[in-house]
Image (cartoon, rainbow, N blue to C red; front, side, top):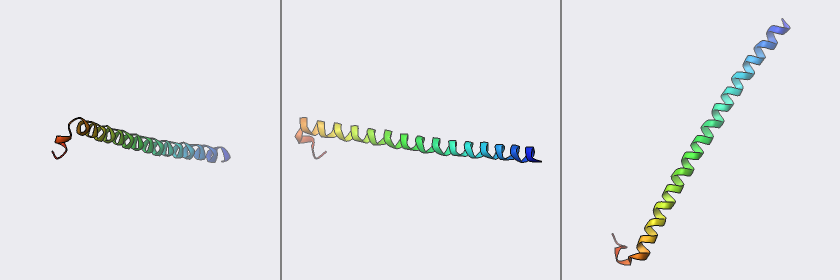
Amino acid sequence: MIAASSSASSSSGETIGLSAGKSIALGVGAGGGAAGAGAGIGILFGKVIESVTRQPEMRDE
């Protein structure tokens, strides 16, 4: 009886560990995606500022 309950708790622990791993992976993936988008937007606006500095007459377009 004791061995059976020990086995059941081990299985439950593995399920909790798997769930925790999935949650961490989801958070890291979402954070990486947000960081990539932020870097892309920063590069885009940096190039816009650079082009307006070179040709100020294009500012209104």
